[in-house]
Image 1: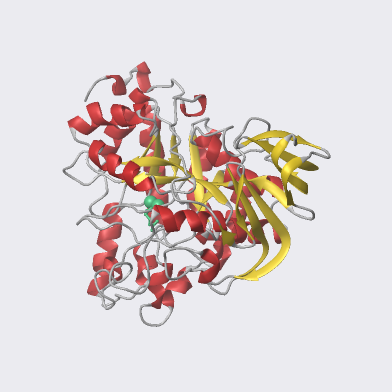
Image 2: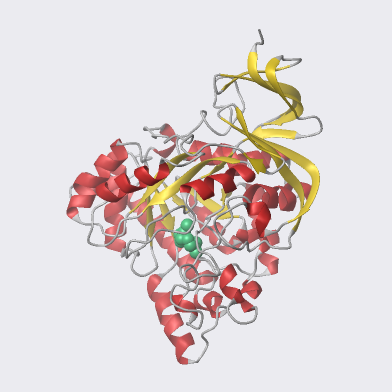
Length: 482
Ligand code: URP
Ligand code: ZN
Ligand code: ZN
C-alpha cells in the first residue's frame, strides 16, 4: 500500500520564497508531504523540471454575458481546457450587472454556467448601476454568498460609474468587508479625444491607442486611489499598462495605503504598433488600457522588481477575430470606437511571463510564482488553499520545463478563441504537465479533465483587505446609508 495517491518525483519545487529539490506527495486531492524519496501509487516524473503552484488568474472574462443575451465566445468548458493547457488551475471571472437590473439574478446565472468548469473558480461582481437596492441590499447578500470582490469601471459605455456612484460602491464594500477592483481610465477624456479623432478622419484600430494615452489612465488611477482613501477602502488597480501609472500606486503605497496594482501579460510584449497592422488586423491587439511602446516593457519590469505591481493576470477576453460575434460584432469596417476591447491569454500567461521574466533573467522563479499564483491567492482570500506548495493545501501544480522552446501558435492555446495576439512569439519555458486536485489533467499538451470538476471557491472575510481605520476628520461617512 503506497503512502500517496500520486508523487511528483525528482523536480525542483518553487514556492514564493524558496527553491529546493523535493518530491511532492499527494493524498485525497491535497498535498500531504514535501520531502525525499516519497512513494506513491502513481508517479509523475519531474526530473529537470520546476514544480510550481498551479497558476491563479484573478482577472479573466469567461462566458461573460453581453447586453442582448449573448455570452462571450469562451465558455467555462473551453476556457478551462485553455487554463489547464497553460498551467492555470484557479480563476476569478466576472458576473456583470446590466444597468437598470440587479446583481442577484445574474450571479445565479453565472453559477449555473460555471458548473461546467474544470478549474476552481470564483467571481468578481461588476457594479454598473449603484441603485439603492443594489448598494444597501444586494451587495451585502452577494458578498455573504462568498463573492467578496467588486469591479467598477471608470470608463466604457454603458459600464462606467461617475465619482459619486464609485464612492457609494466603495462605501458598500467597506460596510460588507468586500474588496474593490477598479478599471482606471477617464471616461470623459476618452470620449472627447475619440470624437476629435473621428472628426479628423482617424478611424482605424491604431487610433484606439491615441484615444487613451497614458495620462488618461494615470489621472483615473490617481482619482480612484484618492476616493478610496477618502472612504478608507482597500482597492486593487486593474491592468496597469505602464510605469507612469504604477508611480501613482507607489506613492499611495509609500503613504501606507492599502492599494495594490495588477498588470497583464500583454503589457510586456505588445505595443501600440501592433494595432497599426493592415485592414482590420489591428483589432486583434486592441485592449484597454492600450498597450504602449517598446520602451515601456523594460520600465514595467522595473516596477515589478520593486514590488509596486505584484500580480500578473491574463485579462483574457472571449472575442473571436473571425465570425460575426467577436471583434466584428458591429462589422469590420467600423471606427475603432465600435470594436470590442480585450485580448485572449489564459494559456499564454505562464509561458510568456516565464520566458520574458525568468528565461531572460529579469526575475527569479520565486518572483514568478509570487506574481502568477501566491500574490493573487493572498489578495483575493484564497491563500493558503491556493497559491503555494505545502502540506494541507490543494494539490494544484504546474510542471514547467524551463528549457523547452516553443513558437506560440493559437493551437497551443487550446481555447475557444480563434486567434492569439502572441502568434509567432518564441518562448523558452513551457508547462508540460498540470495537476489539479491531485489528478494529472494535462500532460505534454494533452488535457484530460471532465466538465464539472471545477469547484466554486466561496471567499470569507480575511485580514489583508480590512480598512485601515484612518478617516478624514475621524468621520466615517460610509457608516451612513447614503
Ligand atoms: O480591454 C479589456 N481590458 N477588456 C476586458 C474588459 C476590461 O476592461 O477588463
Ligand atoms: Zn477593465
Ligand atoms: Zn478585464
